[in-house]
Image 1 (tube, rainbow, N blue to C red):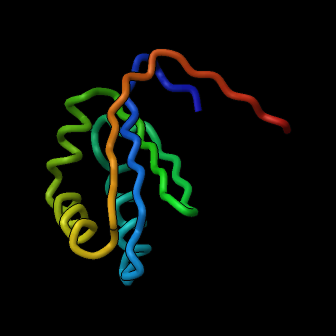
Image 2 (tube, rainbow, N blue to C red; image 1 turned 90 degrees about the horizontal axis):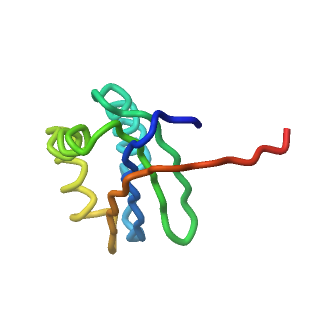
Length: 103
């Protein structure tokens, strides 16, 4: 996933509660909505003991606008009320990256 550098990564790590009714549908909706936002570059996600989602953005302004998007605000609220025991958000500037593929 080669991106124009530098760009920004939002790293969202979380631990869920046992009450995850509606979580999967909201996750799918948030991913579709994020893809429509100006400055969105891509997303990768994994969930096991903890969840990790990394979304990539062209600028800090694009990240700020996403955080303030009304449907995203509602999802954040539901997450705090129902789905997460904890979460941690990190915003990082990506200056360099590399990959390995066995294909």
